[in-house]
Length: 222
Image 1 (cartoon, rainbow, N blue to C red):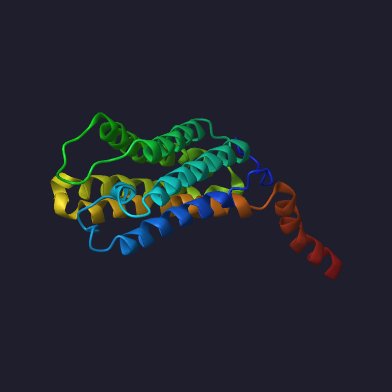
Image 2 (cartoon, rainbow, N blue to C red):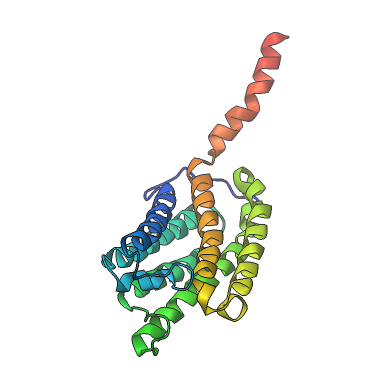
């Protein structure tokens, strides 16, 4: 059974791309602001919240959570997808949790608050990976987005490989800051791409007009 693509409704899916871009921008700028007190290779993005203007990182987590929620809504409205929107909705909530429960610096003892933060972070990654895998079939059933099904599967596999290959036991704690950024870059780039595809996917009416145009030109020329 194929699924038609509804026209984008409020909130527009493009807000996901905007939110991810904001999160990435904050995560890039803050290490510069905290230069001398923050080690990019060895420290996680969460630790940016502990330094100068750290509140911006907390805001960025909330913005990312909002963008993830928007993507979940768009998928539910535009695709015949039920599992992925639920998974992304939970991931969105965990992003917000990460903003209010803070990590500790590398080498410091874990606290209950930091354990909550770490669990929320890992949960966000895993839930997003699961959503990517579960979206393959719904995408394939949607004519306007069917060509994005296979790339989504490969993106999901790449995300899992990055999660394993960039984990602290593999790269070492001294390089986990880079490893975490690689993990995040894989699934965040997928979120941006998918949100833009959802935003600009042609409606059924547009597809029918597009398919009918060659036939009309042919009939008029005969």
